[in-house]
Length: 304
Image (cartoon, rainbow, N blue to C red; front, side):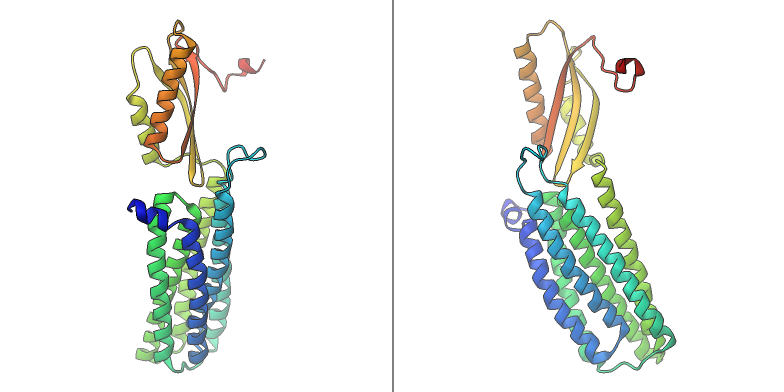
């Protein structure tokens, strides 16, 4: 993604677009359900309401996450995005349960479908809008490291797959004449989005529990440190955590005890700057220690 795209496709701007697209798709998909009486299209319309709620909540959380650090939140507000991801996962699960409930009734009491041509056309148009928006969101989410934007994009993808399943189900009804296929496909789609909702909630919980950075980010950190390693300098006790768009690394840097404080501090500043240049959004904290001193965090003797 170019620098211009990165500046234009911000999480806040894309989530505002997501709110508008959700409102449009609600109108399109509700109309499709109304004129066809398809429970599959009803499930599609219900998920669009969930899209709207998720986009609104995601926009609120991204706005909070971008607030600067303050006295009460010295590390910033970046974890607010995990609440958005968890909330969106819960909404997806709720929508899946509602779809299964509606489909369960229709399996045993199938109803004839009407005006399928218009209904399918409206569903395809709304799915196309969601697919294009999800593509843009995934690109921006990777560039901005925004889990809230990624969660909304994944939700839109589940909406697209829901629409695909619905179209397949209605086509199967037209070919076979088996009206109950409409409800069966809707039930299967609900199971699929239920899985996606559970995965989003799991990722959110891991972020709130200070999950370590991704392996590729850790590899960049190690590569940067390797550039400073020397027989008189070593690094240990490295730990990382991610908080929304930011990530943090803490480590110890050992050096000769006879170095002056100024020399040691200058080297530490160089290492910290190199780390933050190698990993965008990183905050590095390095503790200086003499070469012959070790820190023991888990030794009971250190607690006496």
